[in-house]
Image (cartoon, rainbow, N blue to C red; front, side, top):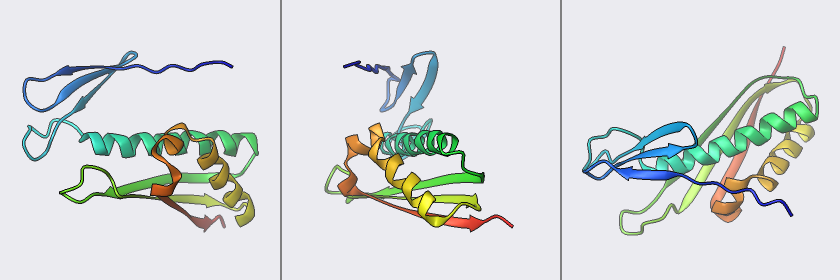
Length: 137
């Protein structure tokens, strides 16, 4: 079985944040409460990773299934209690403009979740997703 490996390197910024290198990309993380608000919070980066994971899978499936889609956006949100250091629930909404049948779009949603690396790492039991379809005219 082929093994896919991922790696990053984070360097402390001297405060509460970090400069992150991912391959040839640079990212910044920080805190908006006791840092300089110089980058997204790690929890926001996790939600960003989930949105990227879903978007890549939606894009691949749309292409593979030859679906007619004019626009696609994914919104992701999550919440936690101040006392408990973990996201309790994550919600996402896919906004899609298409003339494709609802059944095909439901299939894309199911497959995007089934094959999502970040989605499955977080765990589907914490994630609630829905799709809002805007018909093309």
